[in-house]
Length: 106
Image (cartoon, rainbow, N blue to C red; front, side, top):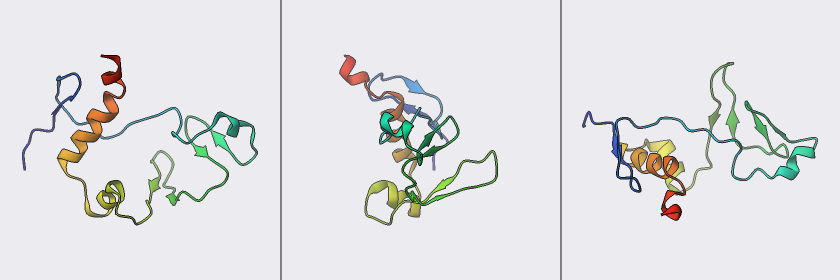
């Protein structure tokens, strides 16, 4: 295993020295602003509840992120959650998340 934890951005071609290990978003992609008025929905900086759906989310002690258990499928994210993720996959995710939309701007 290599000690190089960096990656080169596919769009910017910049060498990033470390792989980011967490990401944030203002809301999940499936959040609809119309949910804000529903009694069984909530979006804050700390939590998101949408129509009281069961998203196999396991809470943890205060200050720790919840554990999100994915449905057992053959989709890459579900497989990697069960079997582990390779550094190459983490690099691909980092490049996609950190440089989202840059290719359209060029």
